[in-house]
Image 1 (cartoon, rainbow, N blue to C red):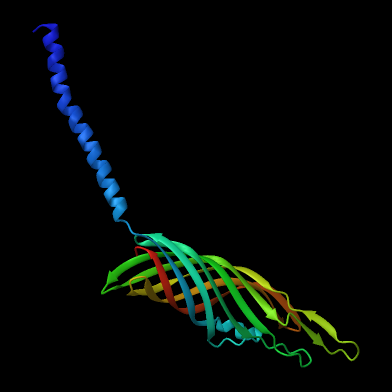
Image 2 (image 1 turned 90 degrees about the horizontal axis):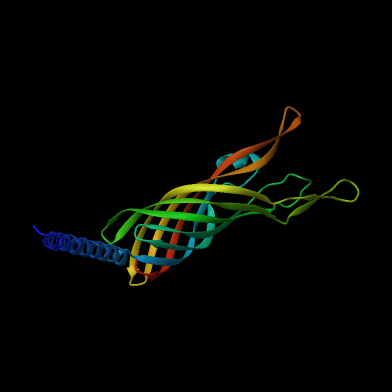
Length: 227
């Protein structure tokens, strides 16, 4: 076989392989593009209401630990089964302070949390999701000081706010109720820390303790994009 014939044979053999590689690459790119197009991307803007229950151990520090109303809002963005966003949540109770008849202050717990969602299963137009959160909680008093009678000029005692990290997790049920609206029920628990003081053996014991709260939320959310 002449050199020219060998070159021609190599070219002929190479052309189908090159064409196949190009076609395969184009097919893979088309499939990737189609998969990306099928993944729904969405944002939800939600209003929250519900109830919060304090750790019963806080009753040792004269907190009213009964369930009380709470409210908030959240915004979550996601793609497909997963989402992440921010949630604001606030509730209040009272703490009895036995200081010469001083009125019981109101204790407000307000948190701003980063939240994550993962859809576990979808059935009958609804979905079950796992929730996780981490954020900052502020526990503030109103009024933030009390006057204690001393027989002369009353002494002013400051009630300083408490700031703490809070970490939580739970479950949620969601259901679309219209083209661009959905409702949800969330149940979660969060852990947070506080410095505490109590009397023991005639002295005052100071320590850092971990507490929990439990929350039930009902959400009405507007959906932007495909959910």
